[in-house]
Length: 265
Length: 297
Image 1 (cartoon, rainbow over the protein chains, first blue to last red):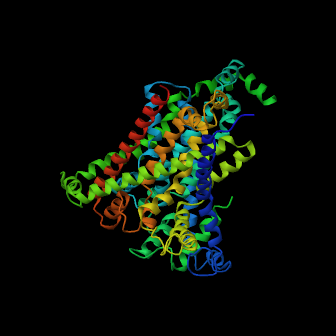
Image 2 (cartoon, rainbow over the protein chains, first blue to last red):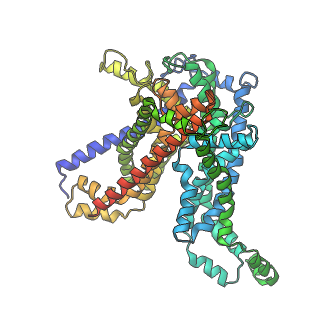
Image 3 (cartoon, rainbow over the protein chains, first blue to last red):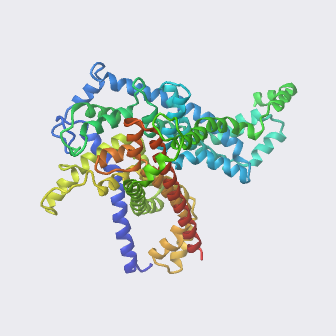
């Protein structure tokens, strides 16, 4: 049996503690938000001051929460459209780029991935000015276009990763057995890369649903988006100085409940 | 099988299929055109607009830039924004690497559980995550309750609207961005290498710094780049947790564009954010390359 050294003990202790802190930080806030949404009180506090479903009742009340419902439907509609378009465009591009090498291909790939690294807020402002100068009024379609730009890299990455697992010999044997390119794509390529496309589409959907920097600029009064509705209304209300954790009103609370519910798998 | 033989046996269909076969560049074209029209052109427009002197965008000139960059406050905001990114990258790496190591040593079933925990923050909205941190960091929040209960401090700590509080919250919010690339690189690593290192007598620390980390460096660097870019532009978190006391570039852009409606100044601020984040990301990539060369020396 191997002798354990003092440094190995320090390794286990230090890394164990940091990892425990990491798991607490990852899980804690989610648990706290879930429990807080069942509170009886009017303020967002933990532990909650008694349990009730009142905020969920307010949330599903079609009259009192109508604005939130509309914002949520807008968010869902945009996320579905943007996800579908980004998935088609990025999958095609990934297939096109997969088997090519060279400086041009790398440059194009970097260009496609750049929205991940560039600050989205700068793009949001640029898109707002662009659409305004072109004479468009704020609409859900414009938000969807903006989202497609920032979520396509997610589909492109996951699809490219699964394409790299595809053995070129499979394509060659399919072709040499006489299958056309479309048939090969449908029966050989697609089954192999489908998990990658699905993962990318899921990430893209979530990213669109949750997008703030682009929606912030492109959402108008009639195309309210859920994260903007909650985030900004809340920030306005608290303003300067007020300790935002205490004494919040009822509306953000209902939205809190809504957001937690909506993300249940 | 029957459909396969039918399709292969139909020479007419095959000829059509061959004629319609798209070249690879044609598959890339739709996304390239969409990006050119809705990404590249707007960014060029952003540069153009920043070179107009008045808010109605009629006279060209560099007045907004001289005004913006001549202000000492601007430079403080730029420095604070970059500092926020560096702190968040440092905190997520310090905590994320041990989490990744636990994942690496876990059984297949536990790896699934850990992966779920890692993407858990992604399944809740950024806005909800930010509110959760208000509940935790507030005057009567979870941390202050614990601190007072343990008698560590006579009065509640001020965590909201401070840089520490914001970095703590961003550490959770950005953690999946660090861990997903890191885990994908780490799980492709050959476990024999680490076993060999310890069999040859290296301590666990030495194995970590000379084998595991150098080999997973590409994933760590990619994660750090994403965390840096995302935390410096995390507008809602910065606004809700930082309040009006902490000013970062995204807040300036938002105020100038959607409150004051000074688009040229907002464009200048947005370009400043773009360039400073770009330089920060490039610096992380350069450090990563250096680190790789150093580790493999």
